[in-house]
Image (cartoon, rainbow, N blue to C red; front, side, top):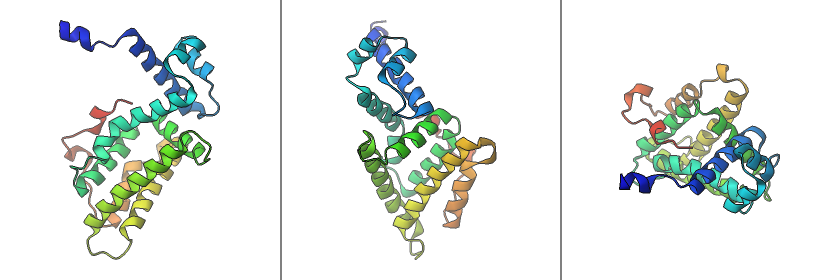
Length: 211
């Protein structure tokens, strides 16, 4: 009983979680700039002053929203223990899993587009995120493509990331007409990389997804 009591979130922690949940939903729906801190507070059922008690500003909320997403995906993509195949297979599974979280896909699409402005508070975050992802994929493709001359691993990495981003936009606009996993695996097969069927894996990344 004592252990259970210690691990139970405090009232303050539950309030912070509610604020982040509200910020995630509103940013997903309207983007970062169209949402005010007062909007987030109202959605969370607290006062503006109450929101400021937990977060100094809207930018801090945004960074917590982005960090929470990364906490779930980082072990699947950035772990140094992953083989080249495991990295690519995990990304395919994340693509498949994202079809069950349209709000999070919308959040990523909206924020990454807004963040092309150097003045946006998430600009540095997305620049670094893309750079790190491309570096890991370039290494993976270098190992998987072997002596194949075209495309170069760094080109394949950029193509792979661009394909996923473009598919997410198309899927949000018309989800019934876009099978993101099928398109992604078709691209990989064109590179000579076979991806296991969805039920071939005993590990389901959705179990690790907390955002």
